[in-house]
Length: 253
Image 1 (tube, rainbow, N blue to C red):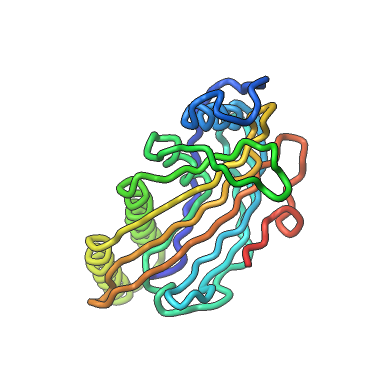
Image 2 (cartoon, helix red, strand yellow):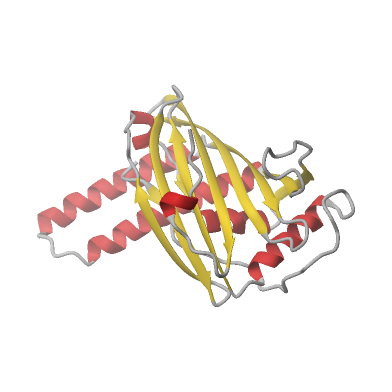
């Protein structure tokens, strides 16, 4: 596509932080367990997060890999920074629709567009944690990516208006964006998305420790079928703990 599509926006529900005596297990339904954990996050006046996202082309090669770190203060004010990116460039990754923002992904899950169930596998270094498997409704997963790509093109068009270009340059740029719109619409008409997240939380405070996401995309681009896989790992840090990209971000193999 025109460039790497990463969005910067956040919207969390303002609910009270819950310190629970309920341990990990089926004492509460999985959807309620996630709601309690998400509420613990949203109820925090501030918290940090750090992670990494990688995009794989159809051959399984890493086409793009970036790290990110951020902080949310005042129950919603977001500061997000990116590092790295575009370590390798494969044609499918350049041209295919792929977008990611950890808080937007969380927002999509919180909107009710996901099925929650307990994950029975025990983590190697966190056997006592609350572990939930969250499967986004296909249409929700698809809309998250489709809407983000359309918004990005709108931002590019707005940015174009603010640039000092000659009439000829503006016309050429607008023609390119119009062509990109058409190609994107054609690709989105064929887009199918599957997203599954593993949510890990502290069993005592319900504050989340980590969100691991895997998204599979299949679409047609210029008449040819393409597939992509996106894998991300986001670590959540309570207030008072520093966020350091190199130290805290999970390395995706």
